[in-house]
Amino acid sequence: MPPVVLGIPFFLMLRFLGLLDSVLGLIVVYIALLLPIAVWVMVDFFNNVPRQLDEMAMLDGCTPLRAFLQIVLPNSLPGIIVAAMFCIIFGWNDFFFAFTLTFTQTQLLPVAIVALNSSVTPWWTLSASALVSVAPLVVIAVLVERYLSRGTLAGAIR
Image 1 (cartoon, one colour):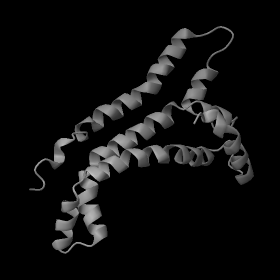
Image 2 (image 1 turned 180 degrees about the horizontal axis):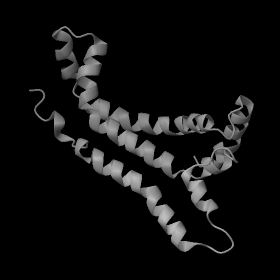
Image 3 (image 1 turned 120 degrees about the vertical axis):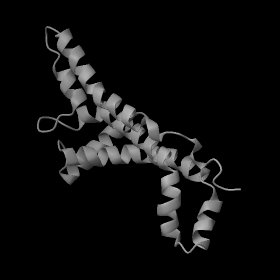
Image 4 (image 1 turned 90 degrees about the vertical axis):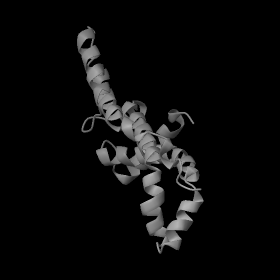
């Protein structure tokens, strides 16, 4: 669904709740937008963890919650990282909601970069700010890259 379709309902909802032009309001909007993406990605990773691992943990005396926390969750760590990276990238690069739901008190990085543009375009400043805005995403991707191996469950069951 295009973001424009959700712009007016989110605007009206945040105005009703008194969260317009606030960081908390943007957090609520981004959770509502990114939670379905995270769930969609995570379902596949949770389905790829063999059910026999759960059953073996429960035979050893684990409760279902403990089996989930100690067996399924650690084996789904690559999926959690992928879902987190998707959410971070989509949330970090979003311009539409950051522009339409904030005015003066709250301003996110993409909106601030666009605000640098004036009648005389400072190309060096815009280029440097765009590079600086992408740098944290690159650093995060490099740091979590080692957790993205899919072969962690090879040989876990017979």
